[in-house]
Image (cartoon, rainbow, N blue to C red; front, side, top):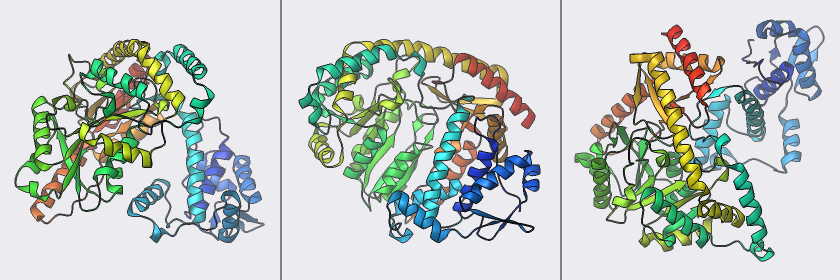
Length: 542
């Protein structure tokens, strides 16, 4: 037996502990079966290029916990675990029995299957394997966090936290805490947010995005996913359809599907959302279209900005279909090439746009605060849904953000960040052009806090090698293939199904060559060094 174990010698975690964690995970998820014989300590030490005492230490720990049995003269074997392990699991979590797989919703099953794919489990979930996945996930998270500290990380959606005015924020937190009395701390407040913060958000949107909205239209929430989930519950159900950008934000696709809606692909080209498939003869197959999800300002993850012509086409299409547009205004605050195009909502004459924003990149991701701006006709239904489904954002957090906006500190931070990201973006573009030349093509507009690049000579196999070797040399990359998703393709017209499948196949082929580079967390010297490493890896591979 040859075990699949990967050791990272750059971590502070002992090698014996890494061997122990990975072996235990393989046992608990059923990848190594009861009764199977493990390689000897000598064989495994040779395979992993470590000392025998390292392997023996891992074996000793597994043996002491009852996972393996060391038989003198025969070897080391996996013990039968199920009954004993299930008792251990119940004593820790007080769960008498796990839910049967057949009882789960389609949405829950998709989550379980995705976990099993990620962790390599061969069986359906039971108490032991489900708990094992959680234990594995926690262990991998600890390893990941330790490793990431030493890497050049081109993670998207992460701002430059070193430049955030933490001192001023802490002073605001202190002042807000003193202003609030005991009675304020006891009440939960409006589920859709306090008036003072909704006023500040409305003023900010007018200042930055040119939106003329009332505080009554603003709904304060815990972030983008909650905004999508709430909207899906209001508009979607089995038998209705939703259009979702592809490539696009996978959580939106999954949340729409979780309420039973038919999710249809809306492809993206150099001009943004392309509705040509659905505006012609095949439009009748959009059964009861209710929602269209789009990121028009800086499409995620291609980086394209939707043209004004396409924006007007989208609004007219939504009006004809009786659908609403969910405008995720992601990355609009850091537009660089001239004046940004207006938000869809500012062009909307038909009251068909639901606008969504967050403060993840303006403040910091852990703030976990976002908002919706809804048409006046939807204010009451959203407020009713919030009252039933939403726990209000904490009063003190709302107070802090309100003062951060009203004091002018957020605008000052925003303006500093505009200059910082413009500089980093230019460094990145200069380096990528200098190192790669015609081998790369930049997608979308040179704006925002992420840029998408296509490497022309990469095949699917070489793309995976490129990413793996870059990671081995200390650079984290994020492939476009993470943002493709699966859609509801069943329809009555076979030609339409074939057309969509062909378009999805072309999308997937292009995605193999494309990577998303976040520039918020990577400093100037890291960008320069990271691109140099990537050029070396690429030249060796191609």
